[in-house]
Image (cartoon, rainbow, N blue to C red):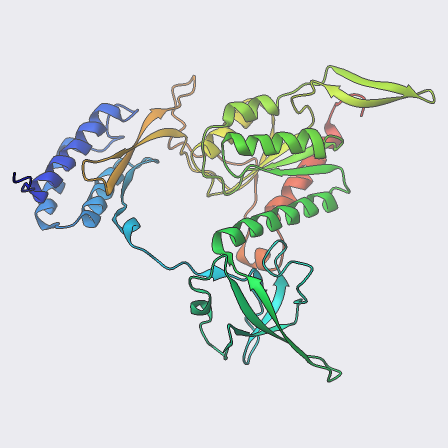
Length: 399
């Protein structure tokens, strides 16, 4: 039995094209095209279909059309290249001094938790990685191919330690190569430690620091654990949501940071009252400040909006684009192509949508490339300063 069939790809693309417009009319939360005439756009963009013969270009066309709405959580994508096998390049977990001239790679820092951060390794700042798997690393050489396909595999690394006294040393170490993803996670933890140190140092140990990297349960649990555990005895907390891509956590954050102290538990010690815990014990009841910037997206726009609306504290950083909406991502009948539309909007009692309503911080502070390269986080410094000012005005009783 002949089980073959003929498929008209051009007709299929035209059908999917019309389907996107149908969904836009039915599902966009605003009820129209946000000012765009989609009936006209459907006609004006249709002629381009005749010149498209692949799904990558087709998804680009859909993105152009959906971009006419000027809203977040929209556009199209192509997943066809996911089937292409790529060799994964490993990572040594080292920072190198790129101002170094000559052969080899001079180590500027051994990343904590990385492949060389172990008791059996002697590598430290100033050492030179001379070779990988016996291949000498020459000046200007692209050494990454030497780590291609080596993730979680042992490689032999040659190390040279120069010495002003003339007692130079050379040795080899067998190290298990890490992945780029693992190094990225280690660098995130490194950044968190730096931020914690800055806040602790600038506040004289009075403030704590938490970062909400995503608006989901796992990040909430981490923040909850820190503010009611590690920082329970601090006078306030800097709540950092920079670089947060969204999710749904604004209600949880609102509840967590809206506590109002009504009771203390503790005991008398040598005639003096020693409080061990305040009530409520499952909500934070001390002053906070929220840190935001331009890449905060979706629920990372809605969360600071709620934070301000409820009068929970001041907001520091850079403006956040109005992207608070909920999306549906739909796969088309051609599985390599998908598109998205914001189907749920969030409207205030005044009738204004949060979508396309930019949030302005109370204290505007921009991190410049120069300040960051100089090791300073101006936004974090401003947040600490603001919260210390708020602490001076705080009426938190029994402090």
